[in-house]
Image (cartoon, rainbow, N blue to C red; front, side, top):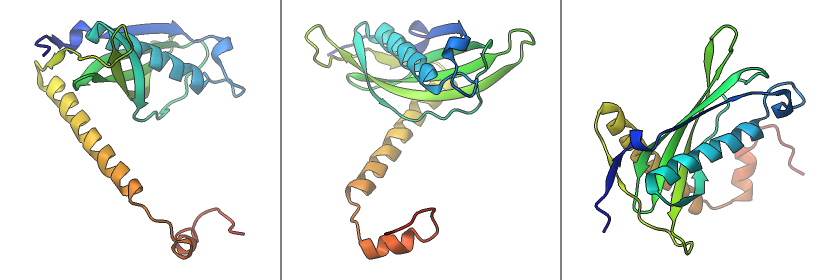
Amino acid sequence: MNNKYKHSSESQVVISQLMLPSHSNFGGKIHGGFILSLLDQIAFACASKHSENYCVTASVDRVDFLNPVEVGELLTLKSTVNYVGKTSMVVGVRVEAENIQTGKKKHCNSSYFTMVAKDDSGQSTQVPGLILKNENDHRRFIKNIKRMEFRAKHDQAFDNFEFDKNQSKIALKDYNVKIS
């Protein structure tokens, strides 16, 4: 049994990167896939730092692109371990873009990555517990418990879903579909 505990501040990782034209899409904004790659990298670094093991991404809870990121802005990603289980951790990542000429910042994304620690043989391995020091630590941990409960209910609802073609025609009448 692992009796080691760490506070999230011990494994926080922050990275900043200038957004270049080579990172942009055809619309001139920074490509979402490029940002996703950075999100995954920082979640890996944070989880590995907390667990002191190699980590893999098990799931990404949600990725909502709230504001576009422009070429020339400084993108900063801040990661924190918000929750730990036996072998897994939830890493929260906040993304902000800063116009380096005006100093104006905008929140672009917040995402939650479930990461699993692996030992040298590739087996899942126990991670240190999490020390909750303040109200923010407690809030983040409880929010992740609620998020997991919600996901379990969601998964159960879809596992029990039964398709009925006649019912689906009624349900789809207000959507932009053509049934042939």
